[in-house]
Length: 360
Ligand SMILES: NC(=O)c1ccc[n+]([C@@H]2O[C@H](COP(=O)([O-])OP(=O)(O)OC[C@H]3O[C@@H](n4cnc5c(N)ncnc54)[C@H](O)[C@@H]3O)[C@@H](O)[C@H]2O)c1
Image 1 (cartoon, rainbow, N blue to C red):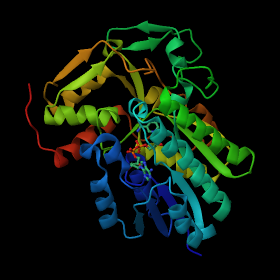
Image 2 (cartoon, rainbow, N blue to C red):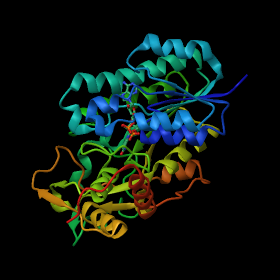
Image 3 (cartoon, helix red, strand yellow):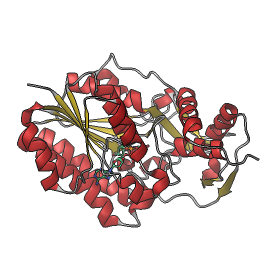
């Protein structure tokens, strides 16, 4: 029987990396993506270019422009493949916490109901498969903002005496009684469902709570895809807006390849209902100001940016993921790329896709 890997959100930054990564490890890759990113963020953020690239370059890739909210369409895909589906990577989502407040029902039905649809399809047709869900650090809400932070010249930093200082924030932080944003709430619902299908039904499910996930094929836009959008502005000369926290907010950044390589390790030795923080950790992180300086160094041009005092609601001031739980379960995994590598790769891809407009 041929072995199938099924990927939702297959034209997005994580899904498309997974399509490529797994194309030589499975007989067939089935992608599900209806380009809803263009509906969320406009044509600029369309992932259609990425669909075309995958269809033309990966011979065992089959694309379905299906909406994960439509269970009948999903059933048509799952029914005929059955237990041949060995690995499911569920990466389709409404991914922005700012956007979620505009249409909470759309956000919830895509993120929560869509995940439930996928879990049920897996339980019904391929219960032995590995089910991987791309969750988010927003499930912890704004709790990280109450950590003892100190202000340095270019970044906020955690107090050296704090337990999270050396490795970052681990999975024991509470996800309860905090301001999640509507997006965080819909992802919590999905995150807990995926855990439950592992704990209750005994399925091989893994939840990966991402920090900033990015890579050269990110269709960056103002509301989502921080590094890709920042570099896009650095290349085109468009104005970039920093929202609050003096531009010193810190994010950890993991390359999509390193994340998908985590999925591969998990699949080969899967567990039931496990949860991992997944990010660049201390190995790969930056503040907004540091990221701007890096972009300017890579492009050789000054960036065109402005600062507004109001921060995004619930935005993290300092987030660095502790990935040591994952490393202890899968000691052979390690990062291949850091923040510098990521930005250089984004720059190189964008330079081919975009034309510069103007620079300061
Ligand atoms: N990129 C990040 O920084 C980040 C951080 C934490 C978590 N995540 C999570 O990782 C996952 C992947 O994110 P990404 O950055 O690749 O996002 P992305 O927007 O690049 O990709 C998601 C893809 O899903 C598709 N999609 C959306 N709704 C759909 C629907 N109803 N039916 C079918 N397809 C649909 C979109 O068209 C898009 O191509 C998401 O679950 C996101 O919440 C991302």
